[in-house]
Image (cartoon, rainbow, N blue to C red):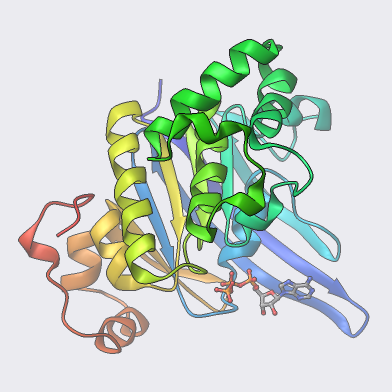
Length: 271
Ligand SMILES: Nc1ncnc2c1ncn2[C@@H]1O[C@H](COP(=O)(O)OP(=O)(O)OP(=O)(O)O)[C@@H](O)[C@H]1O
């Protein structure tokens, strides 16, 4: 068994527009190891989210995956029938996007939303999913008795934690986090990411972590890939990419923020 959980090779993604096709992702290749937190950095519009959506083939028109492969445990997700892929989404690959907290259904108690996802993928009963919801609430630091509340009864940070809890409830092997805490204030953001890190260390899932915040990325990730205008221009360990970047653009990115205390702690540990 390869130590890589996810292998992306020569991925090309186009937006098919009236004024002509636009290649947003150009020949991108990278791997994510089992239990690894991999960060994707780069300025707005460089193609990070386009890749995130493509991994579980959630890209919507006019996006078109025009080439390459995305393998999970050796199986090419791009060639898989939709029915099989549906079993992989959430069950093996969890997704937490920036506006995820708004994706909770306002009319349904949180407990019922857990049940929806858990029942669909595992066939579990209401009682079992309630127990699971309570367990997950504890893990993300929300009092378990609140599983019966509606989304509006929680703060934005709590709602984002709930989405993470639902995502983790199925014990996915990979979690894609695209700007998971950008909408939150820095204190809440830090708390949530510390929890994600704890959970990652307990359960050993892999993470694809996408953020504009390089400082945060350097504190959380083991390896980082840097994108520029659709191309992956650099990939390496967090210490190499932050301390001796090989690409001029990566140097510029680091120089644009205050000096980082990266060497003061091992990757994946908050300072
Ligand atoms: N639906 C769309 N139609 C046309 N072009 C799009 C569409 N979605 C994204 N793009 C273009 O594709 C490129 C990559 O966008 P993408 O959202 O992947 O970037 P990003 O790196 O995630 O940016 P951000 O950090 O701001 O979210 C951008 O130039 C964007 O304008």
